[in-house]
Each structure stands twice: as structure tokens, then as C-alpha cells.
Amino acid sequence: MADAADAEAFAAEVGGFPIILKTVRGGYDGKGVWFVRTPEDAHEAFLAGVQVLAEEKVDFVRELAANIVRSPHGQAVAYPVVESRQVDGVCDTVIAPAPDLDEELAGQAQELALRIAKELDVVGHLAVELFQTTDGRILVNELAMRPHNSGHWTQDGAITSQFANHVRAVLDLPLGDPRPRAPWTVMCNVLGGDYPDMYSAYLHCMARDPQLKIHMYGKDVKPGRKVGHVNTYGDDLDDVLERARHAAGYLRGTIVE
Ligand SMILES: Nc1ncnc2c1ncn2[C@@H]1O[C@H](COP(=O)(O)OP(=O)(O)OP(=O)(O)O)[C@@H](O)[C@H]1O
Ligand SMILES: [Mg+2]
Image (cartoon, rainbow, N blue to C red; front, top):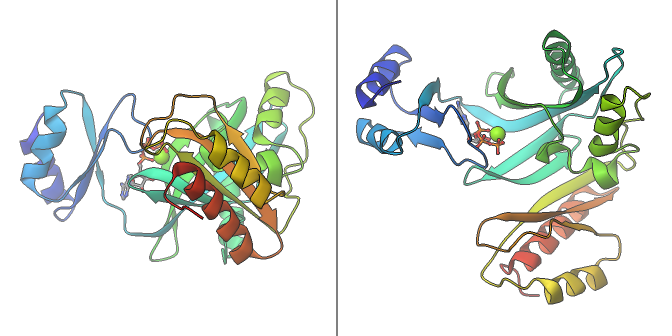
């Protein structure tokens, strides 16, 4: 796409606005993704001065991710397919496994990820971000050839984490068991809030929920920046979700008690 006129022509081709424009390089956490509803919106994307590509806007019911690991000698393992929820283009919550996902569709998603890895000769971890469409199909959104945010839950929720399996694959060692340890695991990202010092919030969360696993990255805290994540797991999805959301919100400062 060279300019807004190109974007308009693309929109006409695919049945009209909205369309999505994306930077071809360096995008992450929704940065470099423009939801374009009008020709004026398209101008904004081109003002950034980066090369962009256009996509049809997909009507999805939810976003899923299939995480697999493949080693040079051809061994591969597939983690359960997860649901990934974004807020303002940033991954907020991951639920493992994706609730109410048809077993056949889950199997198709895992097979798709394994096939992509084989055909691209991937060594290590591959995350395939997917859209589950309103008519029950799965479409690939994005590929990440590395441990990925949609696999952070495996650190505490799977027998072998994505990080351990990635290293095993790179060293061509036998891969570890990818199965979950509990019926449900939830990961919530911790975004920076208004307070740069999270230490007292951290203590509160540890004391309030001894089963909670907190992973902070040691980054400077800036509003909206991903600075860590929390994992919870257990038998009851509502409870597991509530505990993860509470901790992530408390650490960010959006929940005060
Ligand atoms: N074609 C599309 N149709 C509808 N929504 C889309 C489309 N492409 C992207 N999105 C939405 O925007 C989000 C971010 O897009 P995408 O995953 O391509 O970018 P990203 O910024 O590179 O994200 P990541 O941090 O995962 O690498 C998606 O998770 C989805 O919610
Ligand atoms: Mg993405």
C-alpha cells in the first residue's frame, strides 16, 4: 500500500470498510495495527511513514492460539489450544484450554500449527494466533517463532513450560510433556499503572493468594507497558479467572482491595 487511495481501493475490493492496516515491520501489542473505518482513518496510518499492508477485517467470535514446539530431529509436541483475549490490541488474558472449544476444531488448530512448523522447518516454539470465525472456522492471524505471550501460562500450568521445551528443541533434546497440570490455567498480563513502585502491591498479592504465581520482568514501570504476568490454576474456571484478574488489576493499581 502506498497511500490512502490504495487502502480505499483495497476496501472496495473486499466489500468496503472497515479494513485493517498493519506496519510490515516492528509491530507488537497492537502498535502498528490500525482499524480503518473511513478513508480519513487510512490517512492516519500513512502519516506514521512506515510501510503498511492491508487485511480484510475478520469477524471473529474469539481469538485462539495454538502453541507447538518442534525439534530438528522432527519430534513435536502440541500444547492445548488456548483462548486469548485482547484489550486495546494488547493481550490481557489467556485461558488454557480454550473454554467450550469443539474437540475437532482444537485438533485442527494443533494440526495446522504442526504443519506450518514442518513446512517452514521451524526449530523451537511456534505460536499460531488464530481467529475463530462466526461460521466456525479458524483463520491464522499471526505467527510467532519463539516462546509467546499465549504460552506464558505453561510456566506454571503445564508439565513442561514453553521455555523449557524451546531450549530442549534448540539443543535437539527429547521434548517434555506439554500436558496441563490442572483443568484450568489462567494467565493475565500485568501492565504498568500510575505508580512506578509495585513492591507493596506485590506483597499484598503474594499474601492474599498463596497459590498465585507472579512473574515480573524487572522493567521500568510505564503506564500500559507489559511489565509481568500472573498465572493461576485450579478446578473451577470462574475462581481461577477471578484470582488472576484480581492480582493483575491490583498490581496495576486499577483494583484497590
Ligand atoms: N484482520 C483482522 N481482523 C480483525 N481484527 C484484527 C485483524 N488483525 C488484527 N486484529 C486485532 O488486532 C490485534 C493485534 O493484531 P496482531 O496480532 O496482528 O498485531 P501485533 O501488534 O503484532 O500483536 P502481537 O503483540 O500479538 O504480536 C489482534 O489480536 C486482533 O484482536
Ligand atoms: Mg498478535
